[in-house]
Length: 259
Image (cartoon, rainbow, N blue to C red; front, side):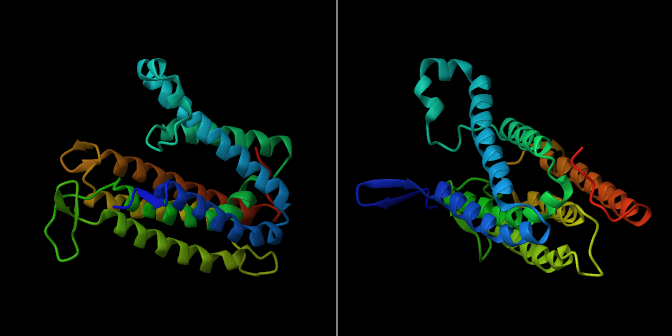
């Protein structure tokens, strides 16, 4: 693939550049929704920045804790630009904790904030898929098809391309549904519905796309761990969609504050 972009004597990591571009485009897209939902962009950007910094630091520290001996022998690796030296669960948990803490302190509306950020989440899904394509990560099962790609010594399903197409379809759906975020729209959805529906569709795509992945952990037969997690996330998303809808229909239209 294209893991490194060489510009003269400077070598830049292509996956990292793609993720930075995706973040910039996503936040730029989300800004109009911040204003539409009455969220101050400055506070939203601060919350996102705090969450990202916490996620980056937390993910690296979590990975270092899991591989303590290697990092003890080479402490400088803590500040390495290698994206593989990062623990996803640890980073996500600390990033969310920091973001929620900031939101609580400033009494920001939880569900409206998630709705306004949903378009940026959808853009980041595309960026992650393209970053995987550039690095060769999240590779597909061996397959000899007219559209197979040669990767890691074998012809494989272009699972990263499948993931990109799925993410693009989710973004299109989100942008269409985002029209219901307008407070003046009589068909306005319940606060949080857009985000939860995005999560549900993303989980559906993950269940489908994992069938073509060559690096997923198998549990029983051809059932993959990521598929089981996606089913759980899908069930939770559908549960909360129903709960938010019922709350909106039976209570005042005021937004639910961050708990």
